[in-house]
Amino acid sequence: MADIGLYWDDTNQCVDWKWTTKIINGVEVTDIDTDNDLESYLILRLFTNRRAQSSWTTTANKEGWWYDALDEQGQTGSRLWQLWYLPVTDKAAYEARANDFVREALQVMIEDKIADTIDISCTLQGTKQLHISITVTKARDSQSFSYIWSTTKQ
Image (cartoon, rainbow, N blue to C red; front, side):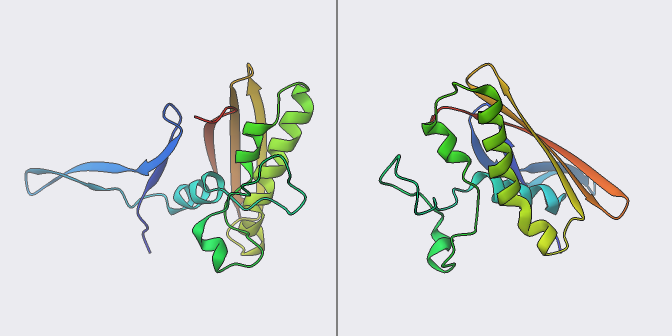
């Protein structure tokens, strides 16, 4: 089943619909792309804000996605948003925390048998951008994805 295609806009730091243009019966038609369900799934898991753990005291707002009201554990999305409040003083520790947040957000893909393995690499580019590389493998098929996450709230 095809889902609405989503893409992560690295420049504007937002999710948007992915559009495609095709020629149908000699007419150029632009419509919402319905290819690559896996990437749309990744984007929803990474770029919606998962509710913070009870130990989070840096901000009063623990964020969370509206769906968390239906999911008592607040499992939807990622905690990447917490990186906005953490200073980049130790590059290795910051990257390790980012890796943990991404892995936590995508773990359900392995539990639900959407993927066999997920390889993640988060690398700081300066102090303002985090490069997130993900390779999802199912059987012998692998797909790689790459995103830029701003380390400061926009």
